[in-house]
Length: 113
Length: 114
Image (cartoon, rainbow over all chains, first blue to last red; front, side, top):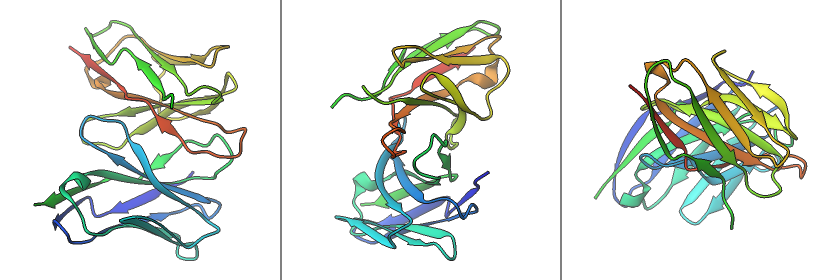
């Protein structure tokens, strides 16, 4: 099955700085890579995703890059704000089927005002 | 837009009791997934149903069972509860038939076993 590794497990940045979270996956058949943000006590919410036919996707301050050859993908948050503080989970799976989401261990991001 | 509904939102049970968690997927979604999230941990997949049939099984204990009904809602039945079952249980739904696998999570049910 798929194995997703994520690092760092914790990350503290000053407000306005950038934050980068990195993930690697094991199954070369995986073609869909969502990122979830989970605030304390709340559900994971999809914030951005990328499919294997593109190398980068951007949505305002959030961007995700994918390197299929190396089987790793990253989340980039620019101009961080205190409300970005949360736990971020990456995942990799095969789109189009009912495959479960296999999450990374999560990265607790703290943005210091 | 309609979201995934879970009930109850909070549940307190004693050891060895039973609990039933309910999940109502987004309308027209055909797949339901159950996850268990312990404190400070990532969500762990338990089980999923596609078109009312079990589609995948993860780390679901034998004491738990689940099913998806004709109206696509799903129930997770938990028996002989243990202290370690205390966790946040998420249900997620997706539309697999449409070719996408984006999963939308419900608000979760927080189960506390005393």
